[in-house]
Image (cartoon, rainbow over all chains, first blue to last red; front, top):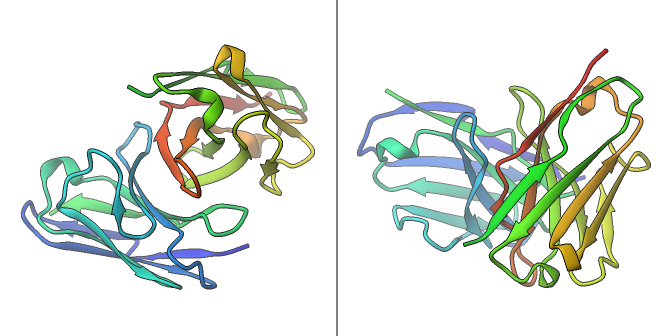
Amino acid sequence: DIRMTQSPSSLSASVGDRVTITCRASQGISNYLAWVQQKPGKAPKSLIYAASSLQSGVPSRFSGSGSGTEFTLTISSLQPEDFATYYCQQYNALPFTFGPGTKVNIK
Amino acid sequence: EVQLVESGGGLVKPGGSLRLSCAAAGFTFKKYSMDWVRQAPGKGLEWVSSISSGGGTYIYYADSVRGRFTISRDNAKNSLYLQMSSLTADDTAVYFCAREGDGIQPIDYWGQGILVTVSS
């Protein structure tokens, strides 16, 4: 199985900050990488697919980059509604595996 | 608007069975592959199973559920199912129904989730 890791596991940031989350795959996955946001008690929401393509309706302050084994999710200017946990997921090979998540807290 | 609504969750004893359903609306259900993803209390997301579009020819399971869970779909009813048997406490989780995007795409829409609790 492809193992996904994320760093940091949590971070504290203020509204307006630029936030970057890193995701690494245990083997190359090309650009078959998605990012998912989840707020407490809510369903996940898909943000990004193919490492850098925004899902419909996702604000442009979210961006993704990377290929192979290292990927990043960047929020250019953190908004109050962005405080949540973010997961990366590889869909290059079964089983589709998720990273452990990065919790973005309010500073 | 894409809607995915799960039902059928609840409390079940270890060794028991349960069938989850997911009612889909707002899109042409038969054209999309569908997934189940679960989340144990306080834990991260775990992919459980996938079924291909159309007749559901291609079916995949996580090792943790293979042989105990069965995914299926009824395109006439716009519904996805997950039959779960030989349940253990480790299967306690919120189960999400999810739609995969067009082509080789990951999940693009998620249901609100349904809680399954396995306890005596």
